[in-house]
Image (cartoon, rainbow, N blue to C red):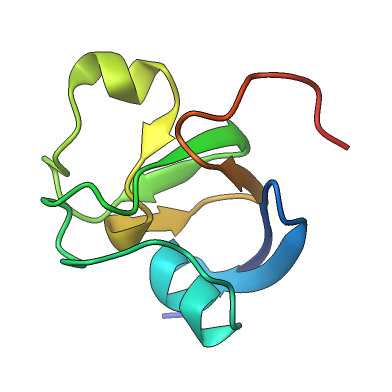
Length: 100
């Protein structure tokens, strides 16, 4: 099974890393030296909570520790999320504004 690779931008640091469509965003970021927050890596502790500013992703597990409202607001858990396009991610409390 082949996978595509997507460019991921982590705001506000501006760091970029590549992530395969069959790899979690957290593992790809850590492998690239990006200091992403994490703890459990199973989608339950919410330490890695991030805001999807643009792009699309999919969680590996059906219930990743997020409410339906949080999902609607664009929040994801990178420890169990895989990219489906290029993504821009930010901390969950980032003010929504146009990003470069």
